[in-house]
Length: 337
Picture (spheres, rainbow, N blue to C red):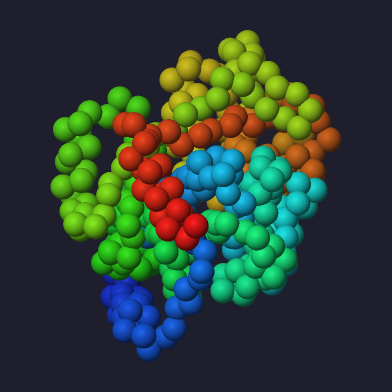
């Protein structure tokens, strides 16, 4: 794979020119970006997938939902439908995407919608919900038709955008210079024991501009396994061999976490947002106990008639006191109220 990507470097040069010119056209006003009279917060990345956008979007929902009427708008990656759709807890992942469905199931008082055209999506959201206070855009950093007032870039600790290359030679969606549009850069999936010296080395590599803040987060795994019907303590996994099923961009942190617990399991890895075929479902249904991620669960659970399918919830947690980040977000929102 590395050799193939070396061959693709000339194509990355073409991609660089195209994306650079496109962004300059937006920056200089040749293409218009629409601004809104309410706070719009964008959570995105420069790398393709695997940076933890869903846990961060959920963090923001928890931060804002008690004081503001919040909506999320996503593309609905992998769905078989098009256009604007509101998502309910009864929706199917194949129609709305797994991550939006995850939000809708977890946060009943939040409006969750999908639309590949974020400008159209926001228009529809405001038509149907004129009293909205805040809109969270999930994975819309490269969607320049909308000018979010507050931009958050995520980059995984073991896969920093500073060490990557443009598609197709690497995994960057646009040149690294694009990070300048963000007010906040969050280094995600850090080891929980990361030292200050290690954090300082990452900040030096990122070289944030004067108006940018850099934060560090880690993944906190729940001590319970969840399903639609019940929950079990994670300790039950010590007494059985189970099957871990993942359809996410980077399952390595989860795999390592389970290995560190000394658990005995078989890992079946599928591609990100994998649409499971009936033949795959039948094979998985023959396994005694299946553990999966939350976004995989919302795709698998409607198709599997079994009481032995569970997911392990996760949350994003700040390495240092999250107060500074919270105040920065809340300060932006309060500017509109």
